[in-house]
Length: 118
Image (cartoon, rainbow, N blue to C red; front, top):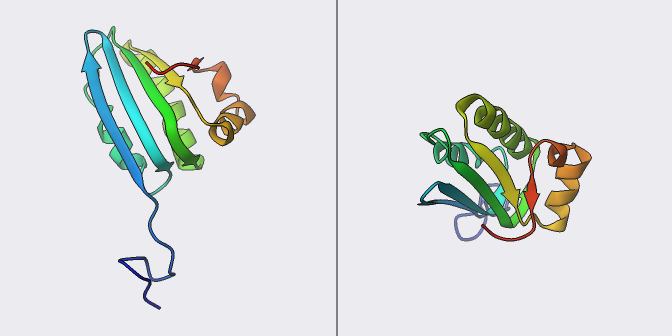
């Protein structure tokens, strides 16, 4: 069955997702919006390539509405990479539902969580 306006065959429209990378001096900000899931993690991961040692990387989650296990796995891999590659990782402004998942899996004990935007 075809959905309206380019929807998938099950009638459910694809989730919206965007990620932007901005840099200033020693700070890299990755701003994520929409849903970080199995269908979108590769787009996010592509923006993390080439971060030089000594940089501070903040993932701004203020507009992230949903995260699944693939997105959580990506954040844990980023933590591992940051330690191996010599850059600092923090998460910023997660919404309540996302923060609940981060705390449930104890990701908040591995990656600092900031209340304010970078």
